[in-house]
Image 1: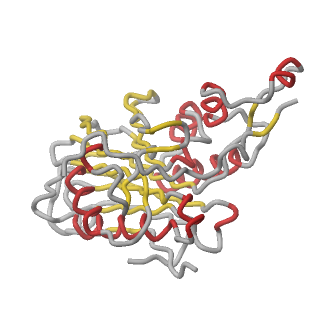
Image 2: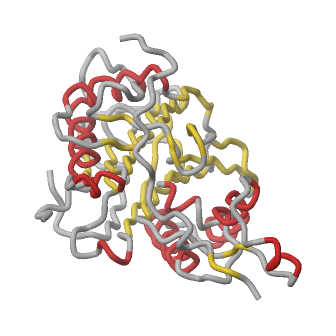
Length: 319
């Protein structure tokens, strides 16, 4: 017998802790399946993405579209980004989706800014500074340079994996103050900034697969499950949908021993001792908004890309 973890902690906490480095559009669908491939215009880069996306809101937030937001752009070499609005703001009467959606809309508009220049940390700085909504969000941005180097900046617990020939070759690490309290860009002064982002670069090869997701995805799906899907299916949009659907199924399964329940137990969240004696343990998925972006990396031989195309998940109307 097991006890579900799905009600242990569903939403992120508001974490207005000081920065450790104090230096100073709209779609008509909730579930996005967009495929990007070269189209005739001017040449852009030696490597590029074929990208698929899928978003599934928390079961209780389908009517509002959830609090995740994302955008995909083929400007420069290619840009992938996700922001996850912090649900705790709802307790203050603030719609948590407003901040994440505005942050991503601003990032999308600033991709071509000369000062950004394929620097995702700079893009986060400018997008955050331009965001006026009250709230906070975790965020991750990945930008592909013409030479095939993927630059990544991450604040919080959204994540990115890179798989090569069926093997995991790179993963980001979540940033948190304590369990379920991630770093977050905020409208409050006492919060994290772009200075606190985890920044790294990875040299991509043709055939690599990038999987980016909000914590609602990685809390419910193991890496070996990702490999099984992306190895079987070669279409990025299908991969994104299948991965999101799998995460959604796991998230409501109280008997599934999810990555989230494993982490919770490792942090001391478990059933009472007398239940442990009976062989019980804390299990279950984590119901949450689920966003998945899958990028298949390929070389551009004679392909061409349009100057700019982007998708943002601004799912108005809200409340």
